[in-house]
Amino acid sequence: MSATWRNWGGNVSARPGLVTEVSSIEGVRGAVRTARERGVPLRVAGSGHSFTPLVATDGVLLRVDGLRGVLDVDRERARVRVAAGTPLHELNPALQALGLALPNLGDIDRQTLSGAVATGTHGTGVRLQGIAAAVCGLTLVLADGSLLRCSAEEEPEVFQAARVGLGALGVVVELELQCVPAFRLHARESGESFAGVLASIHDLADSHDHVDMHWFPHTDRVLVKRNDRVGPGEGPGPLPAWRRRLDDDLLANRVYEGVNRLLSRVPAATARANQLSARALGAREFADDSWRVFCSSREVRFVESEYAVPRRAVVPVLTELRAWFERSREPVPFPVEVRFVGADDVWLSTAYERDNAYVAVHQYHRMDPSRLFAAFEAIVAEHAGRPHWGKVHTLGAERLGELYPRFADVLAVRDRVDPDRRFTNDHVRHLLGD
Ligand SMILES: Cc1cc2nc3c(=O)[nH]c(=O)nc-3n(C[C@H](O)[C@H](O)[C@H](O)COP(=O)(O)OP(=O)(O)OC[C@H]3O[C@@H](n4cnc5c(N)ncnc54)[C@H](O)[C@@H]3O)c2cc1C
Image 1 (cartoon, helix red, strand yellow):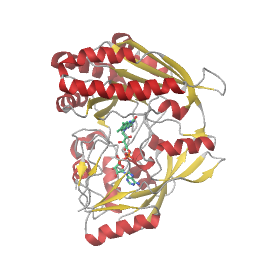
Image 2 (tube, rainbow, N blue to C red; image 1 turned 90 degrees about the vertical axis):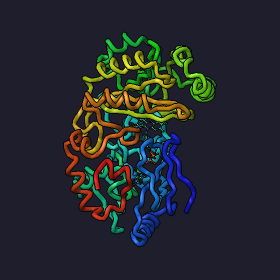
Image 3 (cartoon, rainbow, N blue to C red; image 1 turned 180 degrees about the horizontal axis):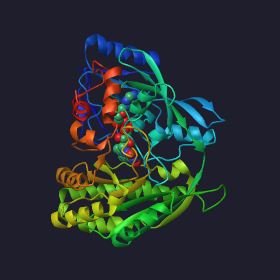
Image 4 (tube, helix red, strand yellow; image 1 turned 60 degrees about the horizontal axis):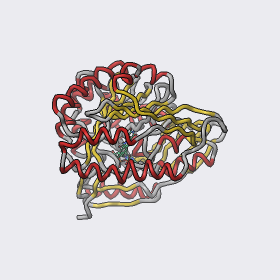
């Protein structure tokens, strides 16, 4: 037996029979061959930032973080070919050096590219899409050890199924990305009232390139982040290094960790602490390279559930969630995050053919998230909520089949490329069936 594997949130662990680290496509093929010869399943681990047990296995755990780097650039079409395990925090500056960027990103950059794409990781912006929508080609090692390249023109069905593929179709070894020219964002962050934000939420989403909201439960305060594109030399300068350190390192991480630890022992003080946290994150305005604005450091461990609901459902969902907090007084020190993303055509994307609002609830890792997650799931179930694949939820194949119009097509592709179910585990069986 090898050592225990744990995810970032600490809520999932596994004892793989074998952990294999690879740095070449041949290495990946070797690992798949080993799993086949031993008759055991194989799961790929990215950087372990999913809160769902997607990676857990007692078979072969394949680490792909040795497959990294930008392999090729097509400057005319602004496309790059990237090794699957490249972490976003290496990819972003590498793209910048080429004068390129991803059109949208989530709020951290610790994930591997393949892990972020496989679960449908997204940022915010009604006219933009999740990271998987920027993928224009994939190369996979399949269960029989063969190498398959797919795109909208080549093996299009595999391409549609494998972009947000949950690691269930094969091992992704390379991804091709459609980038945009590097750009800067002008960030404006301010504290506002819950009622005011709710009254103008659709105007807010429509009138900015990216809007991200953090509402502190048990308070009337919402931190609203508006990010808009600006040309070179426009807008204010970047945050000074001391301010970034004060906000991100000290307030958002070290002080916040201390507050959360205290609250895990004295939960009754949560509402009061949330008032203070909401006010501590004051107004800021700055401009910087897009990826420096999108991503920040998140050191305080938590567990999270996030659902995509049709855009029009965002006000009812937030109103019901607020009523639940008032009724239950559940101690939750972490903010509820609200974002918007436009529809895409990726079969298992939460935004498949639907403009979405994303609502996320978080709980500090030393506090019990079960009541919060159950109440939240009951609310979004009434609004055709589609769960983020990497964040805690309980939905299984039957309900997911109703929520995803191309679910049966994904299963058909899986039957073709992995008939013996080499790339499965208990959680994937729950999601996709046997
Ligand atoms: C602090 C924090 C902040 C986050 N912020 C956001 C956010 O802003 N937006 C958002 O949408 N999500 C966010 N997430 C969720 C996160 O982006 C996803 O869970 C993502 O999948 C994590 O990537 P990873 O590299 O850690 O992958 P893992 O969690 O290690 O793996 C995820 C899945 O990808 C599969 N996989 C990985 N690599 C391959 C490969 N090469 N071939 C086949 N399958 C593969 C794995 O088998 C697994 O099924 C956040 C998570 C955390 C912990």
